[in-house]
Image 1 (spheres, one colour):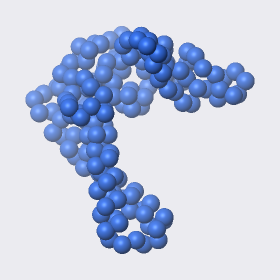
Image 2 (cartoon, helix red, strand yellow):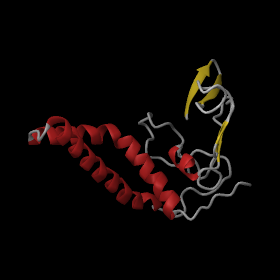
Image 3 (cartoon, helix red, strand yellow):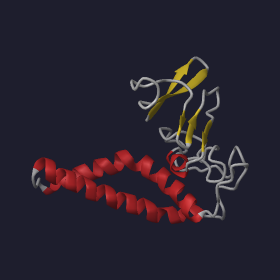
Length: 171
């Protein structure tokens, strides 16, 4: 399963590539993929997700799985760590208490440690015991490149785990 978003003028469409549908060569259009529905999009992105994993990956509200948690995209470095105070779709509070997201530092630290370990394992297999400076530069570059991803998903995971918001399909 794969999906991609295509923009034409003011209209934004989402296509699903499903190798198990139709003739086996992949079909495009509006398809139901397990728990994930991808619809044709207007100016606003409207993706209805029932799966918790898909909602986490898309950084959607834990209560309705439709509203965005962040006001800007991940490539916008201006307000990278800003979280919406309320869900734009269901108006659920995405900041349950003041300074709630300080706990996300622990998740960010765990993601960073996992990244360091994975980079070191990959370097050992590819270069067969490289010099220390290769480890340091590779880990530093990987951390800098993946900083926006780790920062955002640490907050998303922390809200899903400790936020006490449960999925409500009627929200």
